[in-house]
Image (cartoon, rainbow, N blue to C red; front, side):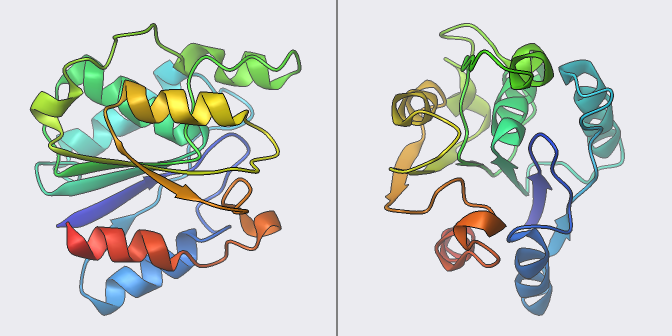
Length: 185
């Protein structure tokens, strides 16, 4: 097994719970890849897909991969998997959403990642295990959008109360529940 993490808009691989997760997985001798995706400049699905295609070509994303997307990274991962039909071990969404328009500059950053309803209807054929972590008090994404996304990707919902957006501001510099989920896969 290997783990691949996609950060969200304005994200970096060395923030939130990402470095902690990478270290914990290294202790178990599990490779964890956390690339830097272009954001906010050049943040569009085609740029992120190009980077994901590279990791597929290099064999880093493969049938043994647990792909984890945080925030916008989750919708990017789901869209990529639905488009390409690449087989992986598991998809885990953390504060993932689709088609949420807030009326601010984030709409321009995230709009190209969104997909229509039923776009992921066959995702269970190539991704046998799917989980969606979301909180009841996310300050950025409405609860209904978080729930809808879990349903869209046919994920087992994992509601964690008072977890905000699962970022450092919400106290998420480590993420034991997610580590336990990965270990159980």
